[in-house]
Image 1: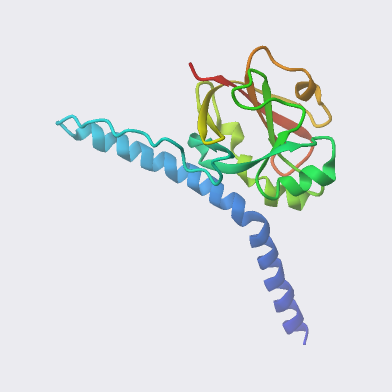
Image 2: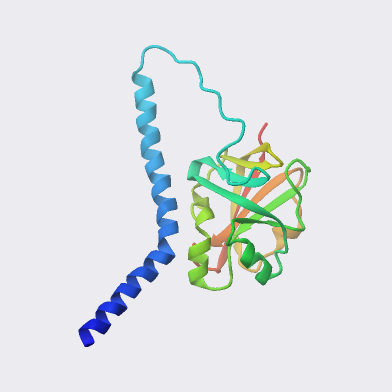
Length: 207
């Protein structure tokens, strides 16, 4: 009887662990495997003597919703963006980030010339942060000049990373103090799986 109970508890524990961490595992493995394949592709192309014609890039990147989505090629992040979400209402934005990335209601939209604030985080509980924050889990891997694409109303808006900051979890300064010119700000929890601080990635329209 004791053995049966212990085995059942162990199986439940394993299932719960998979429920929490499989999304993050997919994101991390996709990122690092992508880097390996990218190196192999560069070597393969270098070895070829005859030049090939450039393959045109698709009009729209692989996003779940051409109405409003974000695509970060370097980390393989692709998610729907939920517009006009109240960043000060936990109940509202918590539901939004279950579906994708939230767009702060007080911020601008692509092409508006204003600050566009997108966030994927939760202060509901630690296990839900791990579960729903996978889309921006690798945001810290972004560096200057990396590309971020926002698709809005079936149109591409390309941005390049200009800066990163780690700020207090209670700091709303960047949400209310707009940057000079159009600026895309991506926010996630930092360190991943906590609500101690926030990681902000800043990007400017690609010239």
